[in-house]
Structure formats: structure tokens, C-alpha cells
Length: 148
Ligand code: ADP
Ligand code: MG
Image (cartoon, rainbow, N blue to C red; front, side, top):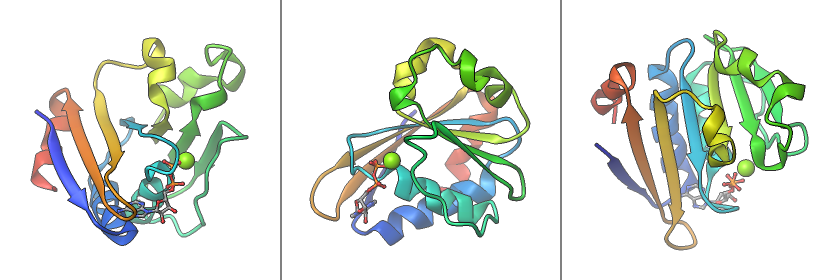
């Protein structure tokens, strides 16, 4: 099952992400795919608000991972530049930790990811229009249908 949602502003994208931030629970994995400028980081900002995080969330590209404290911890990763298989950043501690992992460019570490997760793809359809595709994999994730 894939849910498709079309948004026409960054606020709309963040509203959806906010709802998802209210829904997520400990240990969840969310992958984010989409070209540069699609809205992956924008989405993550909305999700962080839903988790009750007030700090500004920005792109972790050069840090690979940033950690925020909300209702539950948020581990925001951008693995575009990750080459080591994740050992040097202790990837597994995050993937199998208590927080929510949001992973930009997750397909680069596909082999290291758990099977069960929420896959999110963002497609740019115009200056302000995006199509967001959400594919839950596993029982815990299928409840997303109720919040969309
Ligand atoms: P990424 O992390 O995928 O590279 P960003 O979130 O950094 O992308 O950038 C997305 C850009 O697109 C932002 O400048 C944002 O304002 C703009 N934008 C325009 N319309 C939308 C929309 N509907 N949803 C998300 N972002 C949008
Ligand atoms: Mg980004």
C-alpha cells in the first residue's frame, strides 16, 4: 500500500509531517528519498515540530547525523556522504535505539536498514508542488493510514 499526497506549499508538506511526528513511536525508521530540493529537510522540520522539538532543524549533510530531544529523540541523518558502511558513526546504535530515525538518501544504505519502516518519497512536480508517497512496511507502520 502506498499513500500519495499532493502538496502545493512547504507549509502543507510540514503539516503532513507534523501529523506523522505526532504518530511516530520509539524505534521507528523513516526513510526519505527525493532529489536535491525536493523537500526532505523541510519535511523533517515539520516532523520535529510534531515531536515537540523547538530547536531549529537543518540539514545534517556535513555532520551525517544530528540528534534532537523531543517527546522521543529524533535522529536526523543524511547519509549521502556516508561511505564506511556506518561503523564510524555507530549507525546501528541509532537504527536500533530508542529514538525515531529519519534518514535522507536512505537507499545508499539499503542493505543496513531493517525491513520494517516507513518509506517516504518526495517528487518535485513544480515550483511549489510536491507529490509525497508514503509506503508503510510492517504492522507497526501500517497504522499511518489513520493519520493521513
Ligand atoms: P532536500 O532536503 O530534499 O534537499 P529542502 O527541504 O532542503 O530539500 O528544500 C526544499 C525546498 O523546496 C525549500 O526551499 C522549500 O521552501 C521548497 N518548497 C516549495 N514548495 C514545497 C512543498 N510543497 N513542499 C516542500 N518544500 C517546498
Ligand atoms: Mg536535505
